[in-house]
Amino acid sequence: MGFSEFDAYYGNIYGSRWKSLKEALLESSTPIPYHDGLIKPYMMDEASVIAAKTLRLPDSGIILDACAAPGGKSLVIASRVNNETVLLSNEFSGERRRRLVNVLDEYLPADKRKQIQISGFDAAAQGGRKSEHERFSAVMLDVPCSSERHVIKNEKALSEWTEARPKFLSKRQWALLSSAFLLLKPGASLVYCTCSISPLENDRTAERLIKKYKDAVRVDKPDFTLGEETQFGRMILPDQDKNLGPMYVARFKKLETQS
Image (cartoon, rainbow, N blue to C red; front, top):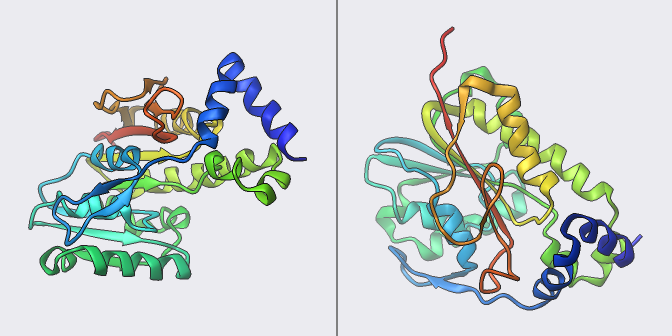
């Protein structure tokens, strides 16, 4: 397996567009300095800032950033919350969690840092704990994904790539999304995002949420204008969006249901 299989897989998905998209993925993106409410600017892809700002923030309660490392989206959310809100930045990996803590400590002013708590639970399994159901007033879910922009530039990762990779990741993503929905309060906002270009990890995962929870979930499409509309969200791709992304963003609202 390797580049030929990678090329054929995404060529089959994107057709004639794949050539220009592949060329854009091979180019280096240009991070922007995000500085709102921070001690100093934090460099991140503008598409990531947009994704974090898509979350509808509550007036009070606890917001969960379920897969928070390295911390960019937590910084964006923290800079925008009011004093009545707590942000729980969660990262399952111990090594990545240490990096997350360092980022939050380095970039957030003391008053904002006090509003941020750190945890290390497996967000995919947390939905199995009924005591945690409907705990959070908003959930940001930036899931581990295929990260094709990194894979295509990494000779080792590309040589090891197989079609099993997006299939395996989509299973993990579904476990995370389904769990996050259980943790969400009725009336609250959930944002699901990836930096993958695979529909299997994007709209098809979002579709599973809608099919499983039916009347309890409503698609609340992102209201930013950058990128292109998909069935359930919006997709920012570097060949058409100033070399930003990739970034898929879907937003949902949990509804009250009759018992």
